[in-house]
Amino acid sequence: MEDIWKESFSVSVTDSDFAGRMRLSALLGVMQNAADRHLEHAGISVGRMLEEGMAWVLMTIRLELSAVPRLGDSLLLETWNSGAEGAVWIRDYRLVDADGFEIGRASTAWTLVDIAKRRILRPSAFPFPLSVSTRASLAGALQKAVLPRREEADWSESGIYQVPYSAVDCYGHLNNARYADLCADLLTADEHRECDIRSLTITYSREAALGDRIVLRRTVGGPEVFFAGETQTGRRTFEAVLGLAARIPICT
Image (cartoon, rainbow, N blue to C red; front, side, top):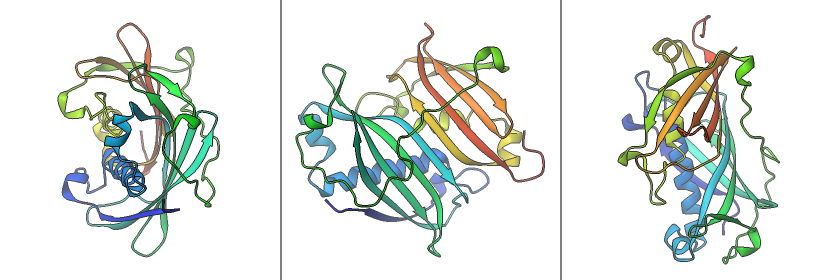
């Protein structure tokens, strides 16, 4: 297994929003695919894992951008396995522009799950050899998204999202990258016009399958917008924080 996996790509029309910025979900999709190809290079394909009755489940992602990728940009993505702490595996990423400057970095925390029993497996249960990179992790122990308590913030209900066919992946649940779209869709038109998204933290608590209904809420605290999704019985499915940076003086 290569120590650090590198892939070049260009931001396409289908990756971009109305302002020519790369959508977060598109970037998360590139990251997910790069990680899969890194493992496939070592002979560990998604198909082989499914045969073993195992799957990787993303718990938390933290992404920071010093510059927002734009339509036509040529970029290099680097990713590496930073090893496991307890039952949590860490994978890191660097995003580099055409001039060689780092414009983004991300850390992700994963668990290995027995698909049939829906239980977390220890790293020792992984049946394939998996080397750990010599490059240090960018974040170390990754922190979950932290939201203000309901009594401390003006949370507003933003509707109900019913998981559609187009958002469900081969594991039968709402793909992790699509949660970024779900949050971005809850930003106002003014927030999109006046701000760039410079950071994202999502913590995934419960999977959502085709047809599931998620109650969405949001609140604003300074340059950050907080999101929470729950089942209709009140069980939390995800928590997220988007960090906005003003394109003009007033952001929200």
